[in-house]
Image 1 (tube, rainbow, N blue to C red):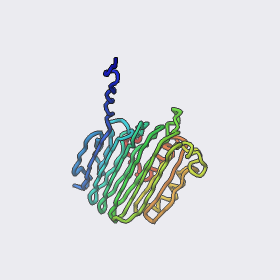
Image 2 (spheres, rainbow, N blue to C red):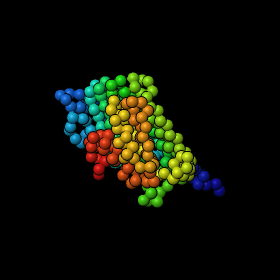
Image 3 (tube, rainbow, N blue to C red):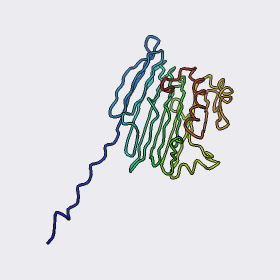
Image 4 (spheres, helix red, strand yellow):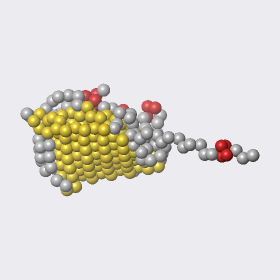
Length: 277
């Protein structure tokens, strides 16, 4: 006797929920201070504003607690003439193991004449089997300024973690009035720890950071920044107002220890409080 019920396919499990977060913020200058013009958030992307000073400080929060395959975060920021925004994150962002799909984070910023952006996210931590594509595009008006840092940790060394398999694509594009000023692309796939162990790539590094300063006084920082950096870091002047810093370290602790003095100097000791917690 045939048992039709036994031959029926079991119902497919429900699809896992995916993170879909979007944030839009515009900043303007009013009464000698930088203030919120408009703000809209949806999904897992939230913005908090912890302090009231001459500049506007904002904290980006991913309420999902991290990223995995299929997740998407979009950030769109406009900084008006003469306004200053310092953007950081509440804590380190985490890219977790992706069972399928790719997590995507896309950020776009425009800075008007005399405006300034301090792009100061805390570390991105990549876990084994993470899959993340990330892009940041900043368009500066001719007299606008920028300080940017992007620190990345490849597994938490204190927990014995390594990224033996994964995919990380990172794109940073800075333009001035639409003309390319700084382009940086990083593509790591497969055995990331193995690739970073190669002498020509990382010589065993477990963490790295890029710092970019666009400011008329950039050249004046060059010698002091070089003096602050360890042997695994370097600084160069790409243009009279464009300073680029690269730093690699064995782990996240060492990276932060070496990075903080650089950021303290370039922010004139006004690094957002979240970096000290």
